[in-house]
Amino acid sequence: MSSVIKDHHEAIRDAVRRFAENEIAPVAEHLWQAEEFPYAAWKQAGELGFIGLPYPEAHGGGGGDWLGFTIVLEEIARVDCAVAVSIMANSTIASLLNTFGTEEQKRRFLRPILEGTQVGCIGLTEPGAGSDSANIQTRAALRDGNWVITGSKTFISNSGTDITGPVVIAAVTGTRPDGRKEISNFIVPSGTPGFTSGRKLHKIGWRGSSTHELFFDECVLTPDHLLGQVGSGLKQTLAQISTGRILIGALGLGILQASLERSIAYMKERHAFGKALTEFQALQFKIADMATHGHAARLMLYDAAARKDAGERFDREASMGKLFATEKAMEAAHQAVQIHGGNGIMIEYPVSRAFGDAKVLEIVEGTSEIQRMIVARELLR
Image (tube, rainbow, N blue to C red):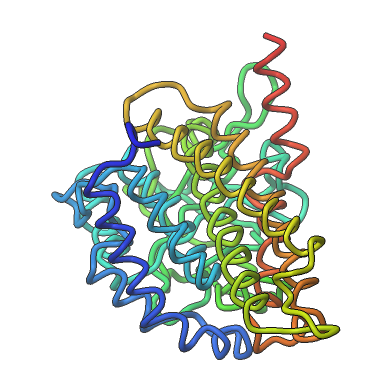
């Protein structure tokens, strides 16, 4: 670990931790209760450079590395996973725009979401196309030189807010020679005629992260809203997905660390049957497991991020890290609730809110089952 973590990474950790504890922790319960997007925290995170940390300075980013950004998400998720996932989801579209966008597209759409004046979202998932992204039904057809989009998306993070900006959506634009669907990506600015947000979706976790359905009814886009080349949409998205798995793993790591810290603090404060909770071996074993799993998850995710920064292949490591960190986060959140007893199921205690957050992590960016398939496929090559 010491060969990967540098002084500037620890400086990032300290700065983000202060921000999360001072600015997010006091409002975390309110955001959860109200299911309210964290506007103030979002603006501050942008001003402090956390949102755009790994992206080029020329486009409003911080010029940092992905290991540093992994630490940013870990530390924010340690306090409130909903705020962290809003930054993570924004990063997904930022990566697409940064890698495949034209200079004009970067100026118009990338800079605002890196600086925190807007928030971006990715529109891939549909009612019948989650992990099976090749089953996308939304269509885009050329008509009089413009693209006309028809279809719907669901479970879209960062949608429907007052500052939602560009949405990158995947749509079928034709049929490939092998008979499979040709999928292309399009940038749809908020407010485009024919593009509307549907009902707000209510989740067991990430309640402060705004999630809606999206609808496209004859939504007309000029040609300059196509991202990259026609037919390259699925390839573009898959090229970014392993990075997303590192970042989702980082959210799990944050919950894991928080579960450990909250459990230790509670055990030191409380007594049962005439003894401090710290004296019960069964509870000692729970925190020992949390600490061990947290250390292992941190090593795995930091290694995957460092590989990405070095330009090395990291797909398998990302899937391993995402799988391990999110499943162990769920275990740790469960045990933290157990350690807190009756208080653990009360929403004013962060462990109860983290329990729902942790479960969501096992589903998004590829379920645990999908991660096992990826790892096994890599091993059996």
